[in-house]
Image (cartoon, rainbow, N blue to C red; front, top):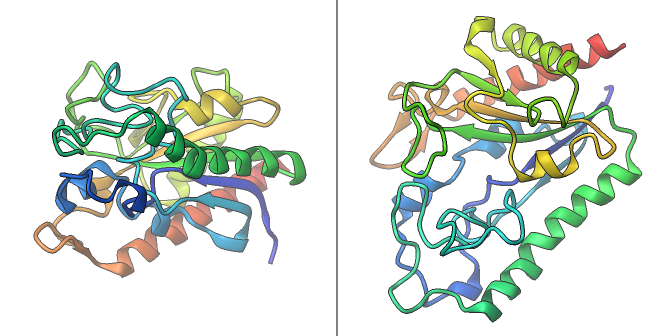
Length: 257
């Protein structure tokens, strides 16, 4: 089996609550689920079929690995250490919000190791592309910076408006996704509604190309596959989408020559 020359980053796939926050939290499991990128590990983790997969167990509601170090609440409630979910639901019991020392501890324990893993992987592996893997709600949530509230495409891939990867690479990946998932190429938008988060902006073309990928959750959280009351899902659908992702990256890699 040929290992694809690709690094996969899955910064929002965690679901766990840090033990350091015991006694601080008011967030419900449903709100935690809604704030996450649900099932993205199952969707995007290709294991040893790629050079490396970097992922986390900690939920983004508590430590958002795709934010800058100075992007914090209260200035940004949806920052690195948040005060509210992206649906405007409070995370902490009133008066139990993390102080500066606890924030520093969370950053040291969860944020820095993730970014060190990215930096180390980029320096020691023979890579052609790094991909930051996400899911997106079918319509924008409360804290979305998107100006439009219209339904989103099936995929958005982004390269920080040309600064993180070449336009040629973007077009090639979009074509490969269209073929790999058997979807219309028009359902894949470039830099719309997302332009690339902190990871893509920071590491893109520095020196390796980075592309952020967002899959629309309606592709697996629709009622034929997902139970909204039990939060249970048809595993076979996730496995199918994972195979389609692998096929897409194989097609893309073959085009690189």
